[in-house]
Image (cartoon, rainbow over all chains, first blue to last red; front, top):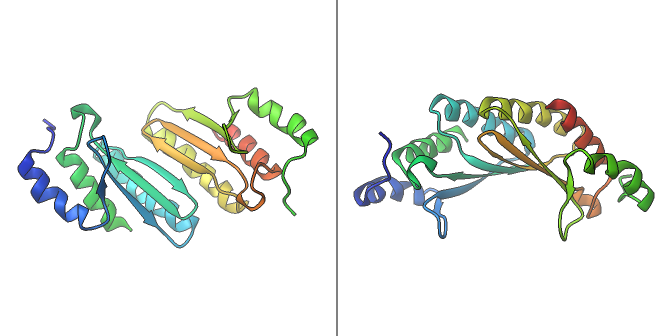
Length: 97
Length: 97
């Protein structure tokens, strides 16, 4: 079962992400990061790679694209906040750039 | 050269879009539409088709995806508002669903 991150989980799992460009959203238990690419094809190529992992893991980002920028918001709707699934997907996205 | 839509252009070109789910944004000369699909793969398949046209025409949407929904905002940054390019891309997106 997916559960919200515990205090310990937050410390150990979120801190490396927060040190790598992710930040906590105000007023919502979610993390957000903006990736910047050289152009639209590069940005959309990243989104395509990410889409396959999101679907494979059945955990989907809320994301916005404007030309060379992709802003990703991660949270787990089923638990009303951050879970280990968000951490796993965030790490994967960082690998896909 | 790309130019902002004239009053006549707005009437003839925007009205069919506004009758087809597009609406004008408040406070910005841009149009927006939300497309809803059965699931994430269908939503992302639409985005992939759209991305190829956007790149081909060098006119890119600002868009957001959350699972089965894709919200597209169109405007022409170079002219600070709506141009015929937005109308052309909007029509194409409607065909791609």
